Length: 218
Image 1 (cartoon, rainbow, N blue to C red):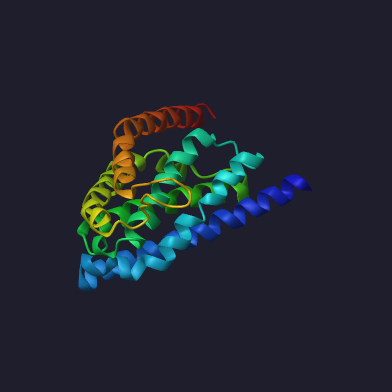
Image 2 (cartoon, rainbow, N blue to C red):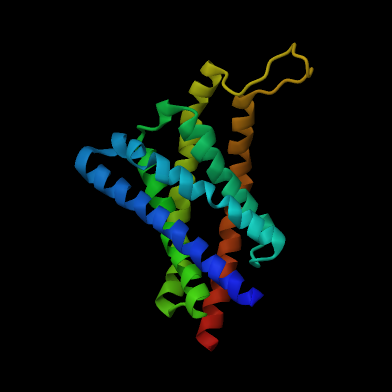
């Protein structure tokens, strides 16, 4: 009974988030073709925020044992995306008309449509078709570099606006006797991408090799 409820919940979760990312991709592509890249963010803002923020539940799923995904791999990826979604795009609207927003949103949405449909199908049927499994473990070969490059570019573009506005920064003196500079924190995030991105890519290559070799032996 518990196992059935767990599978039902995960199926509903995966297909619900899949539908959110499908909406993001549809709005992004149609807007890009109709009026250009400068209008893409305005078209996808709310579904993008909802779909990406819903990924926080994946961290909770891992913590409580609903899924076997390691938190060490899930947390950095979700954290960096939330930072770009809320800490860059939402916080600094000056960045939202850049063409990198289009490449970011399309890379993210294609990746997540494949990923959530793969896991949603597995929860519903017990397994996924081989072509979907291949897509799940191969699409990142292109989508990860384009997505990461867009994330890095948008954070870099935002730096001048972060520095000028001083948004989220805390200056001394204050009652907490504490200071925080969002500009330098954002630079630190950029620097973390340098070792983090190749490490994550290597990890995903290993996962791909393991998953596809296992499917060949079945």
